[in-house]
Image (cartoon, rainbow, N blue to C red; front, side, top):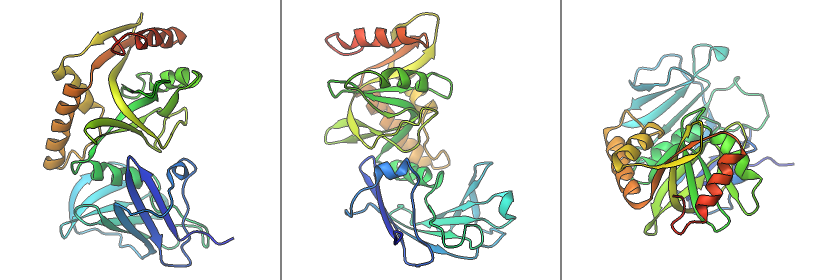
Length: 300
């Protein structure tokens, strides 16, 4: 069986085309990312993957250090991501450089760090998410820590919270409900297109492993908090903006990206109702929400 040398994925209405021109570098995707694969369509981003010996030392300007696998550098005006692990020594096992607008890029894989002849996923996490975050920050939208649910009427509800807030618990409760689609139990993308806000599923799921390549009109924003009883508490715009930013992923080292994200949040909370959901992490929480959804203006 011939392994692929060209892959296209579409996340939040943004298409990424990845191509290998080297027959010794066949491409693959992770199981979850494969749910977002599309046929050949016009891409928003074109990326080439190839083998390359990568130097141990990096002399470009350091823009951000994740403290983990990756660092971001300014390489002659272009963003350059460097991925390193002690397993492979001082030299990075992978590097990626993009044009300033992230429309074109190269991913270089260091020979010897990957199994010979085996298919490789050059965009493996976290590079795929890093790419999407930078694309969104250029006036396209934002990603948030959230569970996204499409109810039986096709309305989108996003439940936002940090790790431990109850996103996966709520997703599992909703999953058993007839006519409901779970877009993700951990990462949701929000965009403004065609005169309305939309929510999108992503490949970057949480413990429940829920990820769906779909979208829905965003009708409600709900911030999660564990409590001794179930209650919905309306949020003032300033509160909602602050909580959105705390659960978002803009490139914090980019003033332009931060300015756009803050403006996006302000417009979002002005257009979409926002509540806090103080809830018990048990089936009573879902029963409470379902009762609210029957009210004339959605969750109350």
